[in-house]
Length: 232
Ligand code: GLN
Image (tube, rainbow, N blue to C red; front, side, top):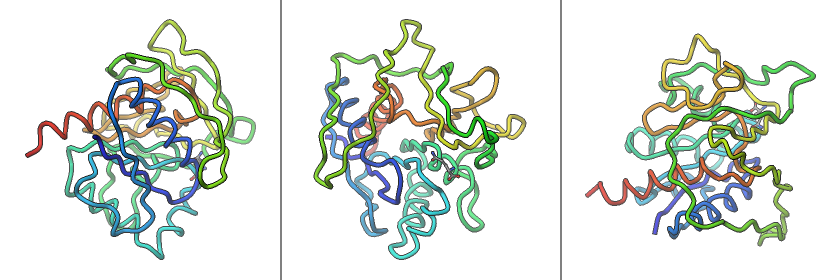
């Protein structure tokens, strides 16, 4: 059983829960998604974390009462080799953490930097990240969940046969500053970095939880599963 912590700060959370369960099914792993709302829930048994997209300013504010973000940053300081997936606003929280913390991804990022017409768009992205293949097809559950929340319609774009292509959904996305990327680029839009990997921290400026191609969630689960077998 792989335990994954999901920051329930604000924004696109339920879609990540679906994507994690779907990816676990594709890999034949069992997963427990721990919904993190308070700092004291961020425990040492979590094998990985997901920081979803949304509005990073609202996330920082939402965190204040329950001290969730400081606990997440403390967890990352303590567990440097455990995988973390930050999408969109989550990528902003990794690249520009609060206060005088050192960035968790060596890449500078600018919020809402696509300009007005292109604030939200879909575009094919080139991915270069080794990911375990899906054994079986995961299901997508579009029913209302226990919060009476219906997940956003997921783009049904079939994963293209060329496995380096990925359907990127960009929603008022931030932009990495190309000259400020000091770690590995694993996803590009044309030549521009839109996904970077620093150690085991993966920051994407698009929303992988809004497509049925769950390779980034499979990456996280596979890395988390490996940690479980390697750490004492
Ligand atoms: N514009 C948001 C921010 O600056 C990020 C958007 C997103 O997560 N889709 O925090």
